[in-house]
Length: 121
Image 1: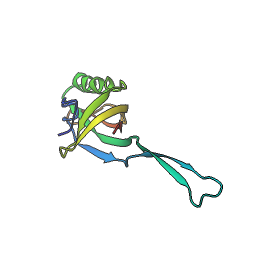
Image 2 (image 1 turned 120 degrees about the vertical axis):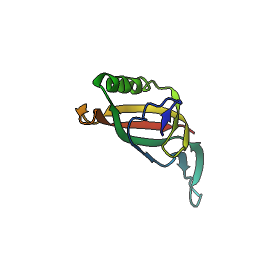
Image 3 (image 1 turned 180 degrees about the horizontal axis):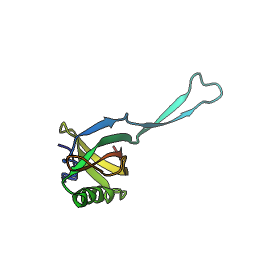
Image 4 (image 1 turned 90 degrees about the vertical axis):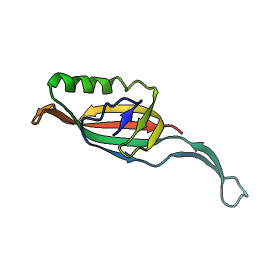
């Protein structure tokens, strides 16, 4: 079960995580008389994480409360993320939370969502 800051905000439905590669900053310089180039490694920068899933609730109000709890995490602060398999992602910034479908009714209320994170090293 995935959590954000230890809170079970995604537990109502399935979720999938796609982790992107770490980005590394480099400066390349060349000089007259130098064969090749000089490469300065500026270190790791960040990596993207994309989460897609489905939120479900018994009432429209409960689903709206789940959506509201996720919307307040788009605050520019670092959070702790744990995915479905127990992998821990510390120092995660929530860049965007977006319900991808309108709230629908069928075996309760539900909507599909997308969350874009940026993990700092």
